[in-house]
Length: 339
Ligand code: ADP
Ligand code: MG
Image 1 (cartoon, rainbow, N blue to C red):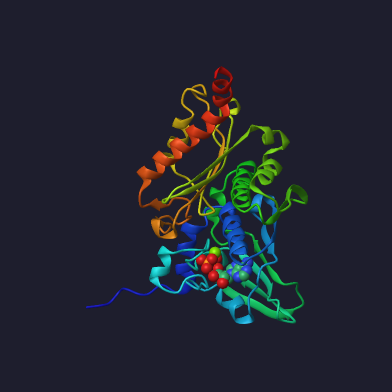
Image 2: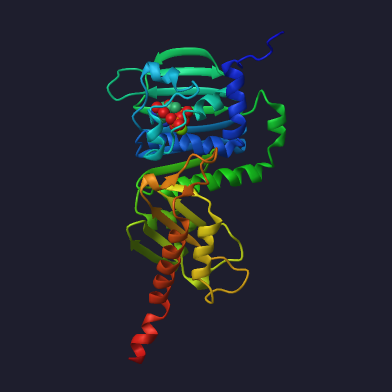
């Protein structure tokens, strides 16, 4: 008899996990922006070079990390966000798996500079293929800067799988838009190859939508607002006459997290039935707030799909809320006139 099973070394396990979490540069953008939000930042800067191939950097003014944590954050399953299994069903943060930084550090050159408010000096750590190559004390402002360079440098197959710069940049822009729309009270900026793509001051949702999609959007927005026992719905839909031939400006946020959900999308689309022509898609920015206990976020590596306890009820409430708001906007003046 001979035993042949071995436990994989950590850096190999991290590389395998990275395959799930990090599909392309925009995945890094998402993970780093979400970490900055979880750290309580009020201002977040994103700097990208070469569509994320050579650099993705996020600088935040959040709470920073201690010297020990700055090292520990790159370990797998190292997280400050949950402690026990029950916490999975009451998530208040974007992150909880403690997997992103370990995965990223396994497949890129990473530099972390971080300082907590109470500390005199900060920490600068450099990592290559999961191994720390240097660590020193440095002067730094409170918060965290995380640079991810040369993504997939040690996985040529993954690097070659990346699409054109145009496509990869589009993915990054999408990710940036989703996160910044979900958090209008945080100031964001985004620079790509030294040109300014977005500078978004803090504001309300309407202001954030307008600064991302342009001034003309302002007059198109119909406010949505409904509160029931199972869900609170807020946000905007664009008036039916502004429906577009392409999908894309359709945003669902559940507890401030962007998600994709074909079923709920159908609820919205069907509320527009008869108001927009075939082959056109309504634009919407809808925020669903539900009890943390009523959803499972832990079903998909990128967390863009989630499971609801009672999707059918949500569908019905969403559809009637939007129908009602559209009706008020479109039909009410005519009825009043006839009275
Ligand atoms: P998760 O977000 O699931 O906890 P990550 O690998 O993304 O896992 O991060 C690991 C830990 O590192 C976090 O739980 C947090 O404590 C710390 N961390 C990561 N990014 C930041 C940041 N920008 N500011 C402060 N702490 C951070
Ligand atoms: Mg995280």
